[in-house]
Image 1 (tube, rainbow, N blue to C red):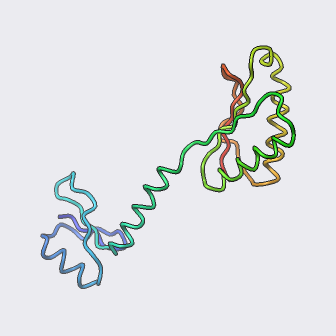
Image 2 (tube, one colour):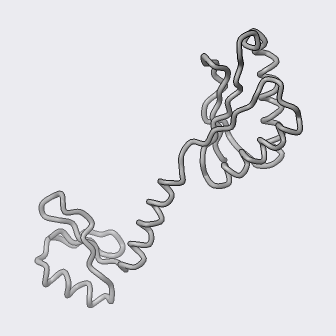
Image 3 (spheres, rainbow, N blue to C red):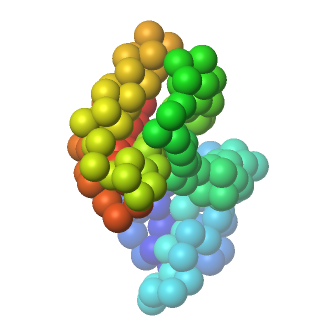
Length: 151
């Protein structure tokens, strides 16, 4: 098996007995990282810490992802503040947020007014948390959308 030490340096190819002996000398565990290639790759690390980090990564994958905030055309300023607080919570969790302004029928002709509402939303959000625009404002079939991420 190919052996990697705790610092990430490759030690070479060893048999199982020698690899286990090297791990015990350092007071660490021998963990098989991948078995899909030949020879399989093993790493000398603290197994408890390694499996904890792997579980944490899986949990983040389940939680993480794009979150949506939908704004209506006639949304009040108080509701914009409420939606901004929700977006702040999502950004603090590390999730990107897609802000969507839904436009129906004749509202589509008043896209300038919708852009003003979105800018008002962004100003409120800017006071709560610093962010950067991941994708600029884009006109789509159902309205306007943009993606923001935490700085």
